[in-house]
Image (tube, rainbow, N blue to C red; front, side, top):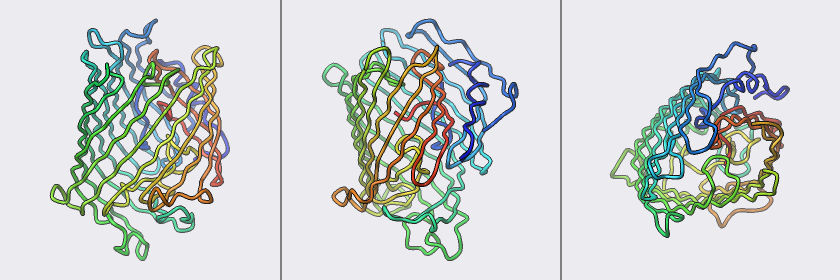
Length: 376
């Protein structure tokens, strides 16, 4: 991670473009001016019309360092549907030799139903620090994770569409290699180090009153989902994961918005370590490396103030806290981790897609995030 200079050149180079994409590589640098060219469609003058973009990208994350690739996306409205559907594609590679192909989309139907899907293939040299809220940075050991995933859902409208519910399916195949000899992962005591294939079956319930899904200005969002991975439908021992997340957006006048978000996640059974709830990411607890802390349960909360600066540029300030534990009942105030920082957003589409640069601070140091789409 750049700990010395914020790579604003990336913003300046891409700012000459226009229109959106999914969060790059982390599950998700610097360039010479003019060294990146983009082919884009200018955004329409009003929300509701179709907009698209295609452009090369540079990004920087704690987990990847400098990365590069290409991204494209499309916003469109089906006849008679107010909310925009979208499709995004990202292909990326990093100087840490991490590569990914990621396709995601949301389709809003006239009935109020939502169909969504995400497919990805990832090769990701990564780091493991042990389990629990007090795991040490000195315990870091490297490994390589290769996985493919397809996750699909369908939510049917209830109560006029504000409330939706429906089934969720998760298909996974994962391989773990390059374990450190004599390390914790190679000891055989951590679940999932020999890889697995799995089929997760479950459902989702969503309450959504946001004015738009990307960079909302008002409204709330609450979602609960649960997935069960039967031992009979894969190569693993039985496990389950459940998650509850909420977000709220309060307009403060003059296009300023105060956003808040929180989540809690609990796993059950013999959960592979890569699937365990964890802290640190481009979304919750920016400032901590993704997966720096992991255990059978995790929770986090954050707030972000968004203030228009000039034209399509918005400034942000954010703060967050979170922790992991063996179970939700074991959360303790003395193991909370904190982070906060400031950022800039450049609006790509009228529907709210942004390029973002965040500079976040925690007791682990300063981290910089340069990528597309917001934390929440």
